[in-house]
Image 1: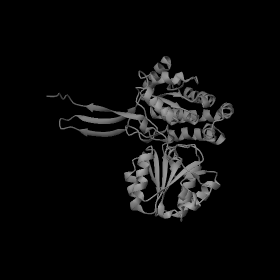
Image 2: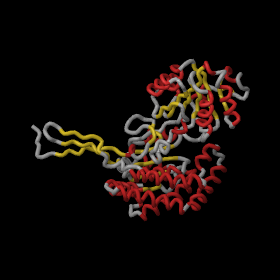
Image 3: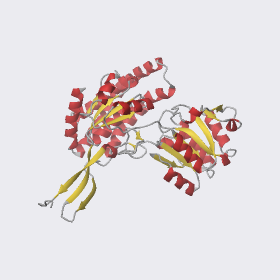
Image 4: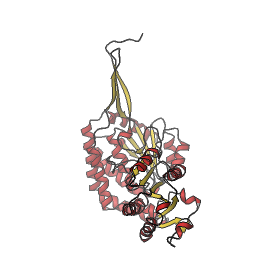
Length: 412
């Protein structure tokens, strides 16, 4: 681990001044290598999938783990999309000339060495590598044991691309053991690692924050809410809710709680429940809503604080917009929350007052994704308020420094 950290620090120094064109060439070379090794990656992923099924992990986690031809191609395209982005390094963020003639410029620079700890999603290996390279950072990756073979196969392809582009392999390193002790070692590497990004369940996030002195871009649970306002269009609400819950239930942007204005309980909610049940979703709520559909099961208090990451949704009636926002403030995790409303005044209030990293109007919470935001990819959704918030892309992986230019001035 000591040698990994030292090598990453050296690589970060090399990357900090790397020309934009060379970084982009490397990203494209990495994409080519992913495509060239797709069979090896699929074979390794199948090995991980068999082991995961033998451990009886949930269908949602199996979905996160799975890599097929479409998802492998999406990883390659993601790298190419990152290559098309403007260089986040060297941007002039602000400048001013002082009365004494000093020119003070604030300019974007890489953070340095990024540590990424993640669980069952092997595609994070590619996203993190690409984003960190583009932003001039070295990265140390520690994937989960469930995706170990997949991540190692992906890493082999990425290293092939880096080598072809003339970039040190230490720019992207993987901790080559599934041993959990490696996580503790990594969290103690404050001498080398500048930021830790944990991407996984709430237990991983909490454990990381308790065990490290390194700054953390925290990603709390995706307790995402969709609120159907009294003014919502019925057909729009049906389309959005079904997509927000069921498109992919295992992602952090999936809606877990549906809040519904009591005045539209009879006009909108029955068809939405029918849609969800037909799609295989378990609906949990109270007796007032159970009357609308006998398939509804009674919810407990914990169901309004649970990130299911599965085909389960909790529904709650609220009296008005204020009550909906109060519920989100109490039970949400400041990740992503949405309102469906034709009333633009209500929508504006929701967008302004809900204190989440991402707030939405008339769209699905499944759009909480760096790729959908035009960032090429993301390492995660940061729910903290310092430095990075929302999708963590290339700009969020830079910091800044001040350059001061004078002509002989001295301070009195």
